[in-house]
Image (tube, rainbow, N blue to C red; front, top):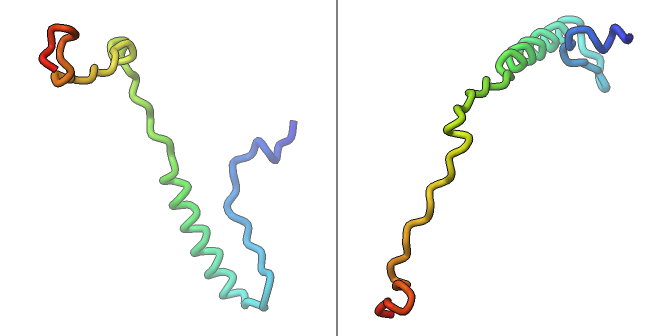
Length: 78
């Protein structure tokens, strides 16, 4: 069993590709990105589904209203 995949999810990975940031700049970046990531991860929870009753599951949709302009077959006045 791989223990790395079973561990809790880690924060974002930051990789510097250009320039030479100072330690203070990196610390500020890590603090801001980590805080934003933690806040977003905390808010990203699925809503709990409401259990539907048997009545709600079995009920049919409402029918369309009658079109009274068509008449009633041969008895209509169309």
